[in-house]
Image (cartoon, rainbow, N blue to C red; front, side, top):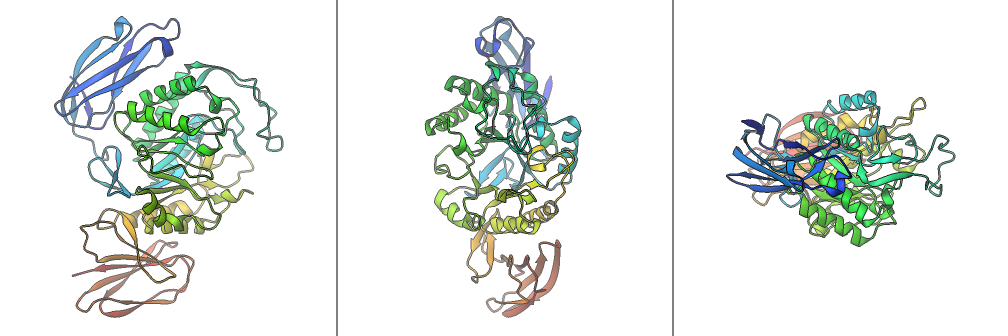
Length: 502
């Protein structure tokens, strides 16, 4: 009997007709039954007469399946067994405690993400460098696109396209000649015929991230396009959404981002976005996390299909400082997926310092939210930037973000929430209605105090630690009680952690 681990991927494949256009003329689906669940999943055509349907089991034990469709070979049945999850397999990430995340098995998940928009479309040598960097454990989420991206520092065609056809010749396109007014109407695509190899590359990337313990935050649509993919018809969009959901939803580490900067996609309306969301809710049987990302205007994150807020800053100077406000307004986890990138581009979104990006991570985290990384250092030789292509990291923030994650993982309850403090500090305590206190993080950001005084009730004993968030050190200051003073080095990016001992 075939086996698959809990929250793994079980696949049924059959050979069938390849004449005509199977992407629109043939249907294939499967029903999977176990003692504790029955689930129906859409299948998809993978080219060369091959049809597949995928299933992610949520329970251990014996299962049976049957497949069906509108061609004779589609009708099959069989059995398989689901074994315990392997080490490191905690299941899909879910919303937990209203404002936070946890894996399906209850293990807390503290999001520290990064962005590499089109890393999966790059040559294999670049992809391998990306994976080598990711294996260092800096991040546990990555945002990337299904479609290729057309933008500054990213004018090269991808190695594959999502549809059969040919793109317009862009061999003369440069940074100097780049314009959104350029006529790219010479593209010749058949939007009813997918290129399976393109989607296999995405699947490979999803699985490679899964093996590294990284969530794949998949951007399904975006506006940076010279090929016509952002301006498809309603019918073409819906066919694309069905195909993407059928291919990718059974991977446990998928998050769905309907779009990056949805408000720049002028060909789409609010009704379109709501229709895509309804397709996702109806056809993703695993209820993966769902979001939509803005450029300027926030989407209405109170919409019930949105599981968490994926935000880009709206203000040059204040953004993560509003995390607590957005928690209250939306009642959902707040994830700052774009708060400017460490780098040296001429653009303001791509030239903040590693110190500032690290500070924004700490501010977002202690205010009860989460932040995302990006890196945009110019490479004059090959124009490979992490934020778009992946490759090699050059910045100083990733190792500090990893250190922050280690601090977050030591939270004694599930997640942090903002707490009252002095005007010049950010204070966080465990975000749990059952936690009775006794754990505090005080962060001073760009302030440089040389000491801090604290007052605790008589009889309580507290352990005090000084955290240098830039040097990544934790210094034990011993046990304290009553009124006490903690000495600080008079430099930026310091924090004090207090833990009640009794």
